Length: 234
Image (cartoon, rainbow, N blue to C red; front, top):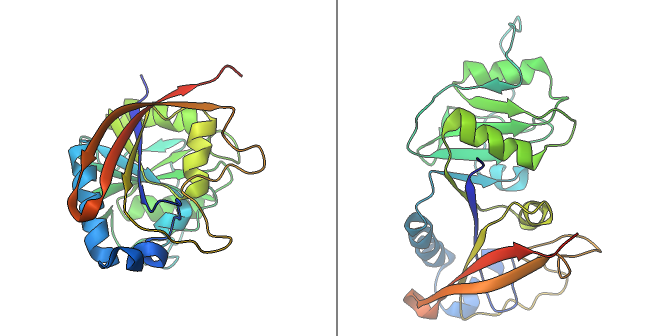
């Protein structure tokens, strides 16, 4: 059974994605706002979180360092550490992220890769003590990814904290069960700014149906909103 997926995001009234661009409207630092977001994250009680490559680039500080010669590697799944209390899962279809160790933010890494990622990159990850899952095709199959996270890593409750396109991809695939939004009393208002969900010209309006589960007033006038997600017939 796949994990229960909660998309957890934070934003201003106009849904602008990048916190630094709208945080001045609150009169508080972006660090203070993110700290409140993290407190809500902890309350969601996930045992893994997942994000896309663009998010991963913010904290993947390594450089390519494949072992030489490249040893035989396991496909499609390599479990470097089983039974962790929490995993950090990152989608990296083309194997562009490199690391200096097996964890980020204190959680063991699990990299989700496309089929065409070379063995040298897999060997680098394995040598660093990093788990990985290789999809059957050149693009990542999100449904298959969730099945493997559940069966191989014991992920029961997954917090989706992607960029706009990653969030929308999970919604388009019908894989998000809930949305948690920490809404701040702020307005970004920048022309052409990226929003929390970006699904291309087709959008999501004819696909997703939301029903309110709960509201909670938080620090700094923020409101924590929880929605249950249902999907319209295809």
